[in-house]
Length: 308
Image 1 (tube, rainbow, N blue to C red):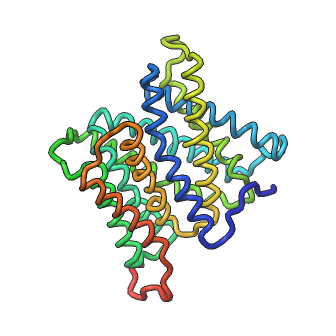
Image 2: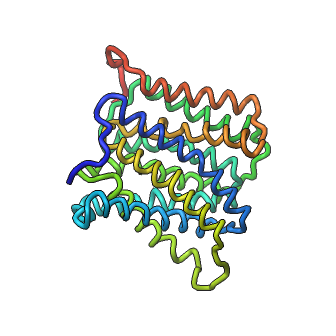
Image 3: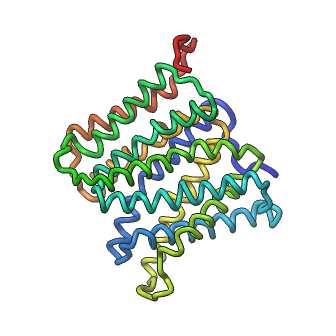
């Protein structure tokens, strides 16, 4: 099958993944506007997001590839099932429940510790070497995310053991996206991969929406915002993400690269919603940026004293 996106070698795949993370940072902007219009059910918002996104992707595949474009190997289909159920649907559900049980701040901190789990999975499954540079970058990233999410005020968090466990579970399923994505190595367009991922995500979310109860209907504005939400931080972001993943061999780098999401979200919060970002949060943003730069810094020689 002909490739639709090819980021080549070098920095191309890494730039694509960073851009995907930046687009994910606009999630809150669309969610806040949908909630303001009266759609405040997390499952419904997620379902609409993937429903419209799968329609976009299906149309793109049909135009670019024709009906043969939907034909994929069993291995790729299994990867799409796992990505759809775990990394899209399950993650959205767990994140929503975690916010209600433990509060948004603590859940955000737990989810943004996903690089730890990706690093562990990459070491166990792909036998990647844990260099000193990687460890420092991951620690900087985690510290930065904690600073951004809490602004140094841990006493304001609503602590719940159940909520903490759910938040950790959300981080684990999120971290598996970089691991599962590497198994889809055949010449398949990211559009096709995203199409199947979104379809399977919606199949999982459908029972939680309870559409059959007829509790709400969509008007024109709600449809427009739902379509925009499905396109900007969904269609575009995942096309860049999965396209970039094909050129990245070290999965432990990926969550660090996409953590630019928290920086974009902070900028939108200040510029659009006039939310105050404290000094500690600003320090966190700098640390996240630093971790991304460090993770992509090429050394002349790898540190021989690395952790195997």
